[in-house]
Image (cartoon, rainbow, N blue to C red; front, side):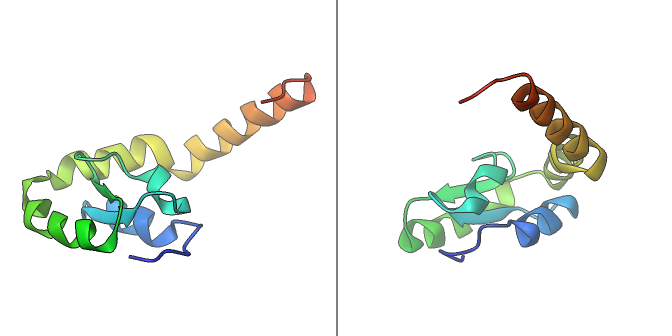
Length: 93
């Protein structure tokens, strides 16, 4: 796990191959992981290590499907486009 990784490319590459991932909460990568489905989001390195025992319980087909449905290039493009339209129309958060 990296405490500084913000992009998540390694996380997405792993999930696209059906590989479960473990990351640390509060990092940029934690937003990509669906806890208990595609991997685990831990609050500490010690907790992350404890999740290694549970990694075999996750289904690689479910992980890959989740990644394809949520993070493929086409989906991301359209999500960014829609956010841009919202901002252009005055939406703030």
